[in-house]
Image (cartoon, rainbow, N blue to C red; front, side, top):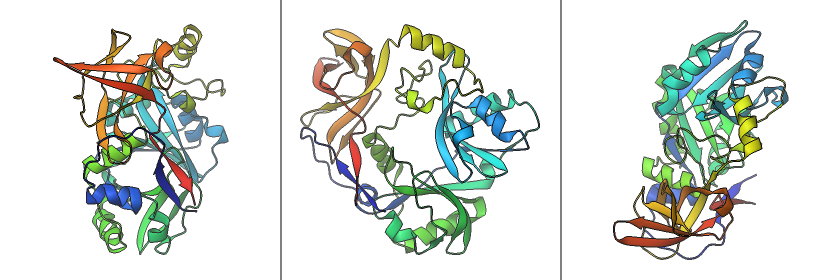
Length: 341
């Protein structure tokens, strides 16, 4: 199954020049070295139960050989970090953002209970992410076994290099995340380049991430945001029988309701407001521009938070910076989507 990202219908915007990396990510396949990510191994007879108590996902319904996106919450239900949970038969691996690596490690160590062994393997492992509609065509002849379905994780070899490979989930572009020994990472990247999968820049990667509406901590997600404000309720499994940090506070927030919610927006025309420009609804300043970029496919797009009464697609927003102003409208995320072929 090969997937291609195609733009959702949107108003026309600017058409910046396509960089080679952006073209690879959107029309073929490209790779990005994800440096500094936190990778924590959890082993022991109580490993699965322990992770079920610290993350918002429900591991009891996650079978070995699969992964799930989840959250680490503080006791007040604010988001500490996004975390990807990989389940293996005898262990679990947690992947966290580079900026939150130290805080996330302290968070999980402080909550260690039962027969559990924790190990920070971040410096021992290299992470290379491949994305693009031609990923399967390029890599399936080299990787055995190949992860067939989104969310699958396999241990295998890529042209002689030991890896475990995770097939990208459907909330983003098609691709594979490779994990290898740090000493093998350069060999892995050379193998990808030889297979017609070029490296892409951080800028190319961030633009592709924004097009898919993927919010990150410290950028689109503020330190006090809960899953309700961040529009990430889908990553929380409440009532799973394993209380997690922040569950009680989150339940209380659900009852009272969120006051704001993260949304996508689009601006027609060629002029782009700066990052952190003020955002107004009906003349009232409600937030700032949290992220923004000019996409070759869908024009000027970004994310900000608005009152829940204004989070409907089509709501008019006004951005202000100095004496300048721009008109935008709320649009559904992601800004692009897959078409299965």
